[in-house]
Amino acid sequence: MDGKKVTDNMIHLKIDDLEFYDDAVALIKSFFPRTEVTTEQEIAESDEISGKDESIIIKAWTPQNDGREKRFLHEEFKTELYRQLSKLTGRTLPWGKLTGVRPSKIAVGMLEEGYDDSKVIETFRDVHFVSENKAKLALQVAHKELDILERIDYRKGYSLYIGIPFCPTTCLYCSFTSYPLEVWKDRVEDYLQALFKEIDYVSGKLEGKRPDTVYFGGGTPTTLSEDQLDRLLDKVKKSFNVSASCEFTVEAGRPDSITSGKLKVLKKHGVQRISINPQTMNQETLDIIGRRHTVEQVIEAFAMARQCGFDNINVDLIMGLPGEDEEKIRHTLDEVKKLRPESLTVHSLAIKRAAALNVWRDKYRAYALNNTDEIIDSAAACAKDLGMEPYYMYRQKNMAGNFENVGYAIPGMECIYNILIMEEKQSIVALGAGASTKIVIPKDDGSVRIERIENVKSVKDYTERIDEMLGRKNGPVFEQLMDLIK
Image (tube, rainbow, N blue to C red; front, side, top):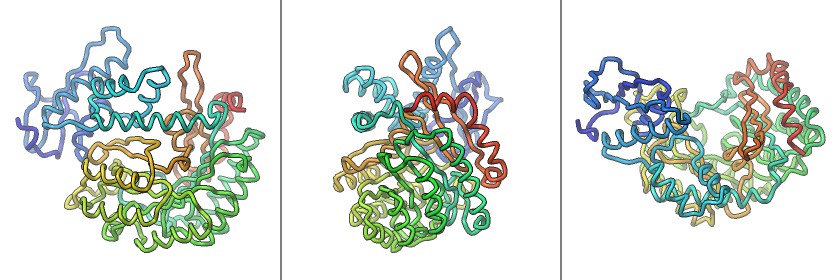
């Protein structure tokens, strides 16, 4: 059948070994991001690919377990399925068969092992079927990351993450742990009291050990009132030696959560870097995706931040939002150039299972989700015009156009925390609802083992079960962390 003409309402998957099922779904949805995938049990053994109604039926070949390590079998499986899907659709993907979050980590690992640039490019291109441009991007980011990491002794340090899971509203594409303030405003104080308790407990265990970087994320931390933000920042400063940290970032995020008073609170407590995230500078799109702010509020928030003395501001944009074409993207980029931020994070829309855009996808089917090489290239050109270079990147499942998220920054203004968490180079101690502590433990062979300590996602459960959250940080894994850091 002609795969180029087939609709993508449903994929029926026939697979003999469910060990490879997750690989298959991830790769199939890279080609068909808005498609449901289900197993198909009644495909004739002779049918490799055939049509059924308005769906696609795929029989996935699985390798025999011949004693090789599992990772080699999985790579062989993905290679064959990628070729099959490419033949079916008549196209290739920018990132080839790679479905993982951290493609630059491959380049970092190869450079650390002594491979030269040409070998890294060759591996991306010939082994993973990555395009030449994306292979070069991964290599460029890897070199930048390694250069930045030389500035700090990350191996014997840790970073601190504080999660504030409240937002003014929930965006159409969002599946993060976030709660609309209007509904949850009566629980914010309860949440802060639980968070203060976790801060007391963890800072007591890490007494005398300063974090290299501090990052307030969410949600939207500036959803808190001025008083709440002041008390939280004061608590963190008194509990951890953040004045000696090399970086202190707060996601101001939503322009409708930013006031001059809140910005002054951040500045008073030594916050060096903030993020103001319009996602788009087209008002129609903002209304569609549930961002209850105006383009004018973005500009006003940026001006207020400059007046308060912030000289390291990041702007987040999303490529592939509903109804956004190249003309609208160009307008957004032109407006961002006028703001002249120090860093720019360009996201490709990722439609998560829990996001309203996925749950209500029939309602929004009329809005095209456009993301093309030209759109991604125009964003990269905008960053270059602003004097920025790519310094970190990551990917997500179900990304529009199978592209990537890239952080650009003026040299010297990069966010070190972003590199540390993406490359999993340093332990991250994470506090708050939905926060995930990652402890990086070196192994004798030079590799690392990652241990996780998860907090519950629900604000209600977090506040009511805070003693249980503290108990999760009272085991041998957390003890290892204290032995590893200086």
